Length: 90
Image (cartoon, one colour):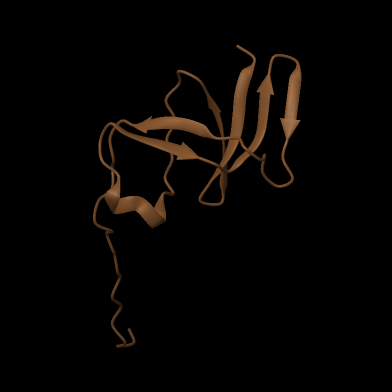
C-alpha cells in the first residue's frame, strides 16, 4: 500500500498508515482527558503520499488531518528513582 502520512506529535515525527496501530507517547496537553475508544484528529500533517503523488507541507499541509482512535491509554504516575550517596569519605 502506497498511502501514508507523516505527522508531528509532541515534537516527534511519526509515519502512519491506514489500518495500522501506532504508539504515540506525547499527547501532553490532553493527556488526562483521553479515554479508550476516543476519536482524535491530528492537524499537524507534514507529508501525505497517495500512490505516486506526494504532498509536502511548509511546515504543515493546509486543510489536511489524520483521524484515528485511542485504543487504550497507558498513562501512569511518573516514577522517580533517586540514588543517595553518603558524604562520608571512605
